[in-house]
Amino acid sequence: MAGVHVIGAGLCVGLFAKSVWPAALRPYFALYYFFTIGYCVPFASTLRFLTQADNNMAHTMLLLSFLLLIALVDWKNFFLLSALGTAVALLIFRCYKGAFLPQLSWEAWWDVMVKLSFTTFIGLLFMRKKELHGNQKQLSLLGKSREQRAKLQIESDKQAQLTAALDAEGSVLSEIREQVTELRAEGANEHRISRIESALAYLKELKIKSDHYLPLHPKREGLMTLLDRVDQKLARIGTDILPKVYRRHRQDTVVCDANHLEKLMVNALQHMALYYPGDEVYVYLDDANIEHGPAQHQRHPVACYRLTISNQPQTLEPEAYTFKSQKLHFDQDRQHLEENQYITEAHYGIMRFEQRGNICIQSYVLPYDLHDIRPKISRFTDENLQGGTTLETPEDVDFLNLVKKKKLDVALVKKALLDCKHYHRTQVRKSGEPYYLHPLRVTTELLRYTTDLEITIAALLHDTIEDTPYTLKQIETRYGQRVGELVAGVTNLYNATDRKIKLQKKAKFAEMLDKAEKGPMVIKLFDRLDNMRTIKGHATKKRVTIAQETLEFFVPIAKRLGYEDLAKELISRCEPYLNPAG
Image (cartoon, rainbow, N blue to C red; front, side, top):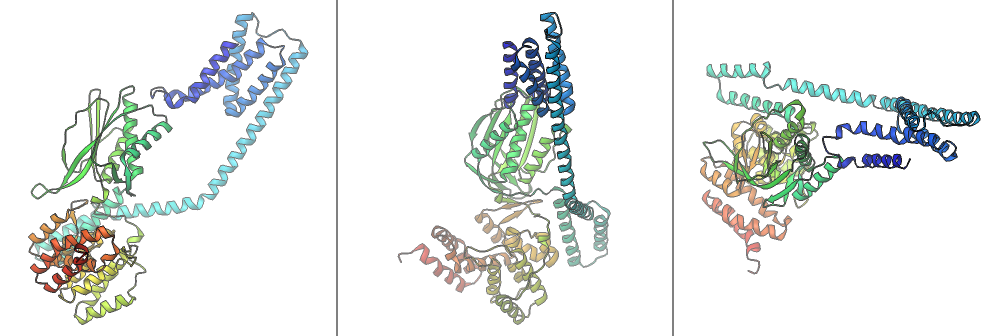
């Protein structure tokens, strides 16, 4: 019996060591579990009883083993394992003793059978009660969830209606495009056609949003912290892989959606463990760039890191990637890689997958800072719908009175102010004041020097596309192409097909100075004037940086545009931070 017990102990150790099982054997764990239970409980206890029939402890262990079996498995498996374990024990006993049963009196056998039957009966009653309780609990939960399911169904129906309504390839939008072509051929008003085309472009954005948007919750995270989380997740799910990590990256932290990026790394490593079991896995982290923009224009680089995972050592060379939207296609059993492509696209990165014989290389190029490259299309929710915004504060009233005095289109300016208040409604400045007061002050000061209606509207909306869900196509649709161009000119973003890339400030100033339209420069100048007037909301070091930038860029711009009084005020407001002793 000692040998039987040693084998049983070894089998039990295998159950508890599931996390270190090779990946190729894990699909057979369920079979191993039932074999171990059958061996350790009905087989071993029955064999012990047969070999030690005159020992009361053997009788007790037999009864306890059947109770344990009832607790471990359902009633069908209980009868199956009991029958198999007992039958094998009887056969082995006969091989060694020459008889199926030990020599006991009929009274002893009767005692054993009564105890065994009673124990089994009690155990089955317990199992039935547990089963009924589970069914009642499930029915209760189903009843409670009826209302939730009804709500989910309503939301699902709404989403389906939205997707159908915004189908960019559908007949409605196609028909509108055809009508636009006909209107242009007939010599219709080009301004009206432009507004229709802007609306069509915005609807196409919404279509992309409804189909492909993945909500992100970016925060700063250490790369090594992320790798540690990945190791812990792999250990929890039982993936036997210990990659060799090589780091050649210049930044230790990234701004990303940590949960999605963790999922990407886990998927990538699980793929290696599943399809290349036993191979060493190598993980490389180094630097890269993704360049955005059409080939005929200046490209805009975004600093990135490159995550390379392979089952063979790699010699990686620095590489500048050019963004090009592409779709990789994977087999049905490699949906985890399809998910990785989705996560990579949501982070505005590039994924490459290469298989050569027994060598697999996965590459993911992702921006260090998600805020350096933003989507043009934001979340499509009810929050985007204007509602509950009013123009009743003293600042609103004074501003609209000034607009009337300047004889501008009050209704159009009021609409822009409502948009400004609505989209900035959740934001506050460093000083704690509502954010929308900043563009309101900028526009108020600007009206002292100009009565250009489109510049006035653009000044109210100049921070919306950078800091809120408002998009450039929405602005062009509601206020016209020039207002959209003015806002785009002020914003520190390069607008690509499906994303926004933050520009370096020097590049942005050079871009503004090169253009014949000086409206963006004028708005930017008055924006800086208000920032200098409210500079105390910043930390001391930040104030010095802002003051230096103001003297270097904005004072010369003010003089160039003929705003000498603005230049003098900017210089006087910079002095205390650049020459505190003076």
